[in-house]
Image (cartoon, rainbow, N blue to C red; front, side):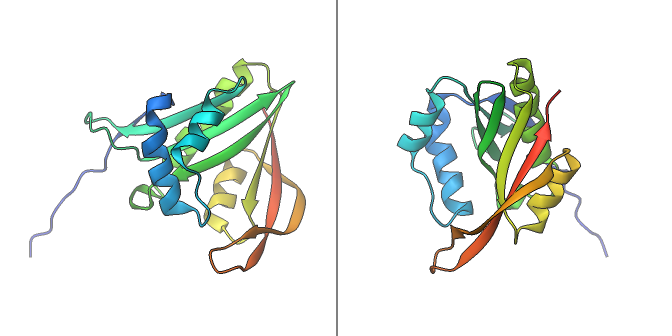
Length: 161
């Protein structure tokens, strides 16, 4: 029989602006058990040293397929949060967002980038390892899920030089 062909959605990555905060918060709510609201994103984005990127479909649709938010201080930076719409997962969008943040932070003089990731999230850990991150520590019972369970956070670091 005949099958249907659907082309993959193409995304462009743009710097995050304050008008993106409601959409970013909406996506964050679908991916995290303790989501941040639009005001939290706005409050972070306007701080000195904070950079963010959003991925939008190249078709011009205003939807956000993913985002990353990072903060730098002195010569180190941290990923505050990263999310990709579950319908777009496993198509390289997280990698593209992270690369955009890493390049921007390196341009701003950052030498090291840190992040925390749930030890029970092998897809994210695999992404970070492909980007050059190495585990440098653990935080036991760091994350709390929606029903009160706890999981370990891995602290990972990448060299941006």
